[in-house]
Image 1 (cartoon, helix red, strand yellow):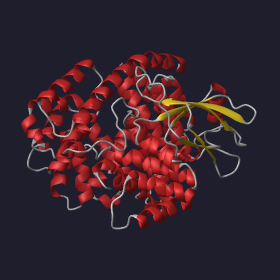
Image 2 (cartoon, helix red, strand yellow; image 1 turned 180 degrees about the vertical axis):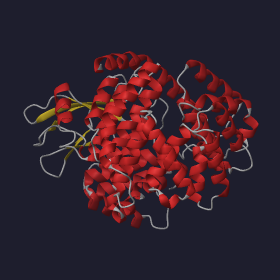
Image 3 (cartoon, rainbow, N blue to C red; image 1 turned 90 degrees about the vertical axis):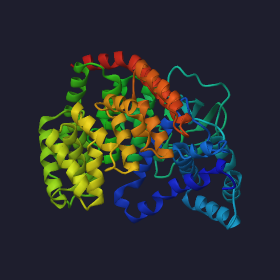
Image 4 (tube, rainbow, N blue to C red; image 1 turned 45 degrees about the vertical axis):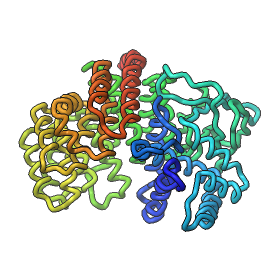
Length: 536
């Protein structure tokens, strides 16, 4: 890069590229599904009120430090993925080659990159990339009913918060890839606020083939109904992940009801993709944390999780080292949800047994399940288990076991053990970078965030001493997990008088996230009650 404003040329490209060799080396790891999950997270990040353009002003040390974020890495990598999907792998690769050859041993700009791709492909890559690199946010594409082999689509900026209204006139040049009857997709480009596209021959209409588009999609009720009817038979795992992300994002934006999402999650309950199940259950966990507000609602969600997902866990049978990587991940995802949201006594008991076996002899237990089991056991753990994990962290010679044990100390929900974990975190027995991550875990935990926040305020000098520049901004950002006006005001007041370097954007984002959660609970809470009543 010629300057820091184009940091994405290095880091966004690395985010896109890092998945290539791993996917080729181990196709059974299903890396494209992980990429689809990451794309959902990036779209949610970019749909908040506080975001920025990929190429942004970076002239001071603080401005430069704040460039190392989810936009530089996640959004830039995702836009490259979308363009590659539109051009085809070989054409895109040739464009990269030509760009690298032209600027070998030199510096480059964003224009250098997209001009090389445009010249190579003879397609409007420059217009596509410029619209995503120089504008903040992302589009939501609203499709009408397809008629006479044509469909009308409108685009506007999408925000997760329903109170934020998109400005008129902002639009992107977007390659829209639609599913066809064959394996290939039909990619067409839109650039206007409203435009018509030719509809390819297909069993049903779905406008994000491959799940690689950097946009959200919404459909009329009948079109959406056909997608749901074909969700397991007609969509790839990556497309199901994209659909789950689209629907959950629209719940957060109050464009759909929370029951719509839970019904979709139930429709994929028997999916054999671990990433699909992880995606589905991640939002269910957020519903339990941020929307459900009474014991009755938490219990209803727990019962729903057990009803829908426990049979799938039972069919997987006992864990074995001979299981495929996919089966190991799937079992762990289901086990974790049953033991946390589901509060299943049998799973919790099994988790404690697995944890003891693993800590005694890591080779005696399938490790993917063991990591999840230790987390469930810690969440329901006592002082003796805390002591055991602390001793493991201090004495183990296996870095993975050692680091895992430390992370688990942040999950205990007994207030006395939370305080022990916090005191231990600021002791000289925990490295700075690890200490910061402990605080992040506790601030994001439903059961631990209040105690962690109180401790941070009361022991700021000790906490601050553990923070490197980048980790300080992450800690500030983690306070966005709160969901009340009181907590929001405390966070803003505290960090206005206890400055953390290079964290202005993180604090603004945290404030927005808290406000979004308050509004989400207000808008979707009554809808959750209605849905629960309808299940009886």
